[in-house]
Image 1 (cartoon, rainbow, N blue to C red):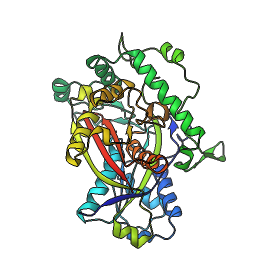
Image 2: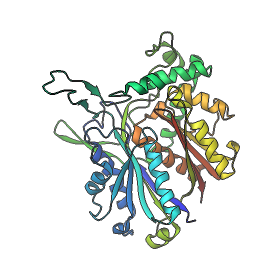
Image 3: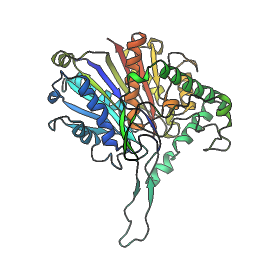
Image 4: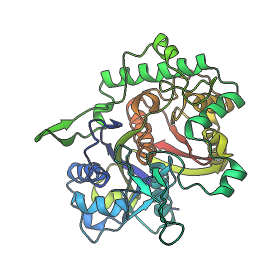
Length: 400
């Protein structure tokens, strides 16, 4: 089997909903990290790139019709380079990385750019087709997040809880208190602020040029973190999704915009193109759970991956667990036998602080885990996340 390696990775800043990146189309946004990887690796023969694989969860607006292909063309890659877009909702960006690694391991590819993009600010409203001729009725749906055009059988068999409602379900089913959720959220904000202060995130971010009032401006840093967050402030936020409830805007990930890209290559491609391997991709696993507790997906996915690799949870020096909701992050940590405040889990903060552009987040986790191995040492890192409609995904890395 051929090994697949992460060689370089970069991302855009993460913008708030309707914020600094809201004017940037998803295909233009995804082109930015691809173009940056090309510029940072000038000795590479980019015509030899086997594929660009990007994850994107929406694909209902400007990100439609294969945003990976559109973005690679906009980035300046040759038209002979193919591209494909994959959708595993929140796990799309990580699935893109794992799919590239599997193709390389099988010998079918040698050299891939994988990643993900999401512009949740620009997610459109969509109008369903009429049920009958000359109908004067229409159903308008918001595609930003969650269910749309619901199948009645799905609703009857599994329910169609919204994402925040699944967070409430997990909190109730696994006894995760509001106080513990808020404490976790505060740690995420504090760790993200500390990481930003020491320059951790500036090393993985490429600025994005935007047009503001007929003037070009650069977005250089993540917009979502709130360094002034306090426990008192979090405690005052209302639970909007259930009465009584525990999930708030302060202990949940945001609705965001962003893109990330990762160079993944075989040993032969590394030699051929003069790349520098940073981490070996050991494998990826996915698993399903009940949709109403979709946040628990990382637990079976991680267990499946560990069994396949012959590793235990204690083997991982660093863990990047996507923080869709503090409730599910805590429930997963506890089921995996890890403390709530484990120093090696999201040591630089997570999605509660940074935000969660759906298709991009999985690639960001891989990027961050790789950088953490580079800078802080250790042998193994795990990246894992929950996925809407009841799935989990996990990917393991080994430092080179």
